[in-house]
Length: 382
Image 1: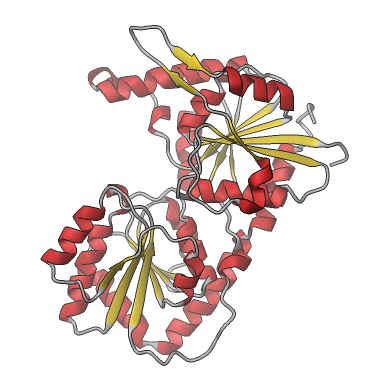
Image 2: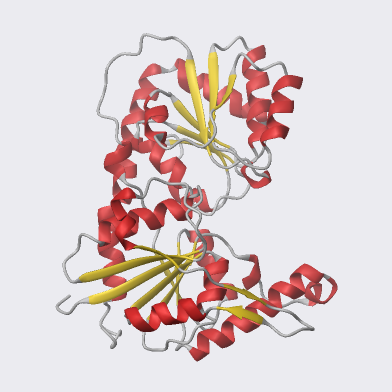
């Protein structure tokens, strides 16, 4: 890359979440590259991460749009349009649907636009007969048609899929635009555990990281805990995260009389320290677009036991870095935990391979691939 390149990443906010964590790591890494001028635009002033290392690159540019079938669309994008015009980016890279549709309401055909597919955005679902009889589907389709007109106005877009599952979804639903598979990455050095000392505490420490919402399905893990209790397994189950389902989980813990075994820690900044103190990472999401939390746990040396969320299929090598169950069976899940924990040789083998496997997803390698994508020879604007 001989010439300077101006890159702007746009995301709604920096609340706790995998997409937000990834963006912070990307900006941190790319800001250290020669000939790269990078900015991170937030559409609302909500920051729940420690961003001191990238604070100088963050710009709060409050913007919004409101689309309507029957009324006039409302746009508050002048400040965003001015920011883009002043910064003159070569690359505009958006994250999550809100940022996608707001940013594309601006006009700037001089950049190469990228749409990061952190999940299978329902708004991109192709039209079918069900769309006509479902108000939500119809709204989504209206937003998709609006967005595709905006893509055309700005010279198109390029989708970045984070897993084989999202790649398949967008190849089917986002034609004629191209989709590139570039699996998400982690700050490997941050989560890597370099200690191999023998564990003195016989208590099995299980850990889960994720927001408390229906799709993360933590109630299933409480069912697993009930079974572990009946099998007289000496364990603790630690949850890092928060969200709308916290009260529901607390009620279930009380109902199942699991207060001595379950610990809800809320949103934690130093997740790695909790991972280092744990033994097995457990994951219950019914729908997982990729699974950064799984990779971070592997980097910390934890075997992973998970339900099939489709996107996380990319991350599990059965019996090598963990196990994936393709049915929601709490009994089988609990038995896998006990079997692995009792087989110390197998546990150590999986722990070591998990660290080795996760290293290929290191952020440094990811950013090299990302820059190669940005500066590919067919991009004449750079």
